[in-house]
Each structure stands twice: as structure tokens, then as C-alpha cells.
Length: 121
View 1: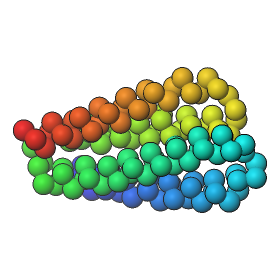
View 2: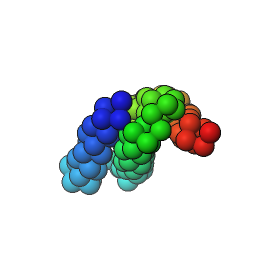
View 3: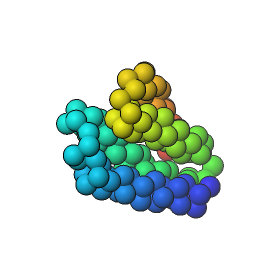
């Protein structure tokens, strides 16, 4: 699983950089400043948790007997729900996507808690 999470983390980091560039260049004149800020928050947390996936990959290779795969999956789900909902919200203006975002944030928190618990015990 360490290789899987490393590959997914690297792909997610690539996508975060690509989406950040897209937002900075293609969306700068198409979105309101508020919507662009929302998009940028999605990119920021996308990158943070792509790096978190790399940490999970490393920790899984270091402590293979732990339950770190759950942390990795929580980060993946969090990126999709949290960042994905912010991307959709900012580009479509559909405000109800904002109601989904906290579920992704909860997945991030669960992932970090599992990471701490798994490595700390």
C-alpha cells in the first residue's frame, strides 16, 4: 500500500499544481474575487492532503503493521469531497455544494487522527 499511496499522492499533488495554475490564469478574469478565493482554498487543501498521502506512504513503509491505510483513504475521500465541492461551487455558483464541503473536512480530520493514532501506539 505504501507504493499506492505514494503514487496517488504524487498524482494529487500534480493535479493541485495544475488546478492552481488553471485558477490563477484561466479563471482569474472569469470568476468573482470571492469565487476565486473559494477555488484557491480547494487547491490549498488539495495540496496539503496530497502531501499527507506522501506521509502516509512513508509511514506505511515504516510501520507496516499499523492501520495507516485508513488514513490514506480518508485523505483521498477528503480531497474529492472537500476540494471537489469547492471547485464545483466556485465555477458553477451552486451554493448547495458548500453544504457538502464539511464532510470532506471531516474526512481530513479523521485521516489525521488515524495517522497520529496509528503511528503513536
